[in-house]
Amino acid sequence: MNILIAPDSFKESLTALDVAQAIQAGFERVLPMANYRCVPMADGGEGTVQSLVDATAGRLMVSEVTAPLGNKVKALWGLSGDGKTAMIEMAAASGLPLVPLDQRNPLKTTSFGTGELIKQALDQGVQHIILGIGGSATNDGGVGVLQALGANFFNYSGVAILGCGENLIHIDRIDLQSLDPRLAQVTIDVACDVDNPLCGERGASAVFAPQKGATPAMVRELDAGLSHFGDKVAEQLGREIKSVAGSGAAGGMGGGLLLLPNVRLRSGVEIVLNFTGLAEKIAKVDLVITGEGKMDGQSVFGKTPIGVAKLAKQQGKPVIAIVGSLGEGYETVYSAGIDAVFPCVRNTNGLADALQNANANLSSCAENVARLLTLKI
Figure 1 (cartoon, rainbow, N blue to C red):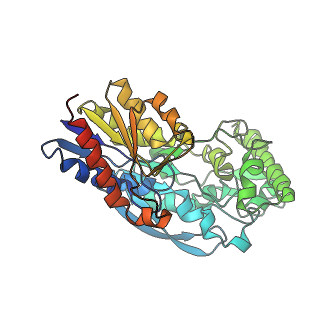
Figure 2 (figure 1 turned 60 degrees about the horizontal axis):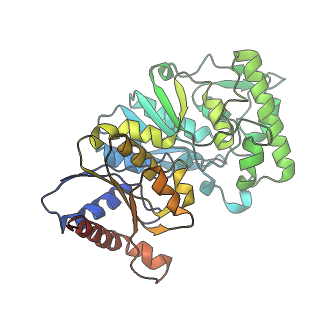
Figure 3 (figure 1 turned 30 degrees about the vertical axis):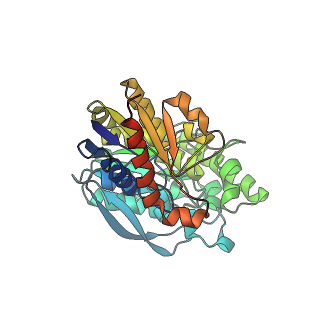
């Protein structure tokens, strides 16, 4: 039997590689002669860098960059084993956890540090960048990123301004002449799993800014700033970004990134599936195993196990999910390509115990799944 193990991480507990190896260990107790292939997966959110580093035998990199409030922070990012692809999570440089609770104000925060990470990747000579933009602390329309990469934004007095939420309304002139020329040689895939436009009642400010510390008054100011920025982009660069699906992601980062060459806003799972060549790997196996920390009714909306299952079903392969726990509505996954789901928590001693014993619980559950597969009924 040839078995592919392609799970997501179990948040706060195990990386995707840890999960895959624990499942393999359980299976090997029952099916020691089977051939196993572990492919760590992710959905473009937290843990994507680690998963893709593990999947490609790559390495983690550390760079000192500008945090959302202008202080310095050491941010992790990844480089693939062949050195051609960089994996970056916006949250590492511009994430909400980097801003103290009592200082959260998206009028003041900047995405400049994320641009610095992109520049570090360019310094490594990469040809491809995978950028996850979840978990941001910013609402600057990606202007901070663009500035770090060489763009300039001037106010009505001709003075260069800093990319942050409160300054968007003051933009008079956009100058992209000094953008890093290496960007033209690189493809940037942006993991963007929301379809919110740049502004308006479903825009970045109205939907996401309150989570970053914005009051209703701040939301109105931020929304006006993003609308003004979008108008200036259309007027001066001939690009319509305000209505693009996903342009409101990460405080308007989705829209701002569209000013760079060779940028694509895509589903995070789709990016990872394509990058890892999972379809080709599935073609060579008899069984696919996937999983995530908690499977519930939301799992069908862009989560890793469903992406894996859809690819497997295109090739008629059975799919089993081994998960940390089950939540309300998990049954919907059965109509999305998963044939059976097995939660692995073995006792009811609480979350801390489940996290601490995740590896043993996974291996035990996997062993029982393997025993079931050996039954002759």
